[in-house]
Amino acid sequence: MKSFIKNISIICGVLIISDTTIAQQQGGTSDISITALTLTAITRSQKVPTISKSENPTGKPVTIQAVATDTLKCTITLSNTGNVTTFGKLVVVLPAMVDVQLASLPANGKVFNQRGISAWPGYVEFSPVQIGPYQQGETFEFTFTKSALGNNISAFVFSTVPDTNSANNYKTAVY
View 1: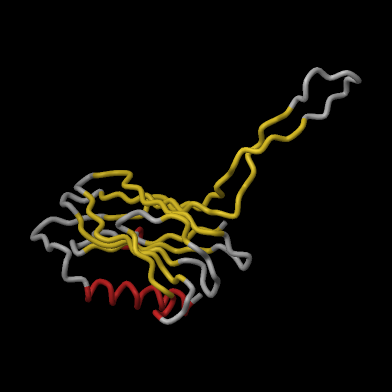
View 2: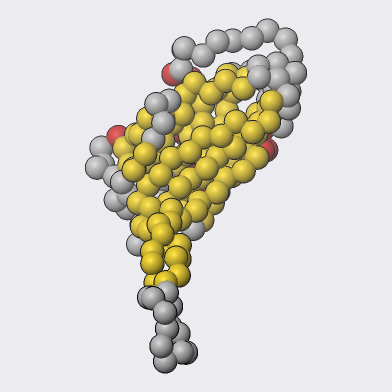
């Protein structure tokens, strides 16, 4: 766990230093935060025959049930309670050392391989993230295939504008 936190810290540090496309603002502060991070299974509808106790059931009764698929949806909700627009990035670290396939990714999302050399996806980066002052509920979503070895993810958001509470910039989720 310590090496994981160290790796995410290094990744975020490099991203902050290397990104020259994000605008800088003078004065004011932001409080960008991850207000929610969830992993939910994508479901599909399936017809299941209903067992009738009657000897002569009419028709063939069925019940529609939601059945989980092997795809998970990751939903991240960000907010900014500060008094200036914040510019930054959102980094989501995918399950480590496993072959998960991204099923969907928005246009502002980009996949980076683990340590840059592995075929496994390492993290997803959403950039740029721009959230206005006192704005609640900016949502980012993507889907990926479940891993048989565990589905732990972590998310970190950071800004180029001074952040009054960086303790709320990190969350984890497990499915």
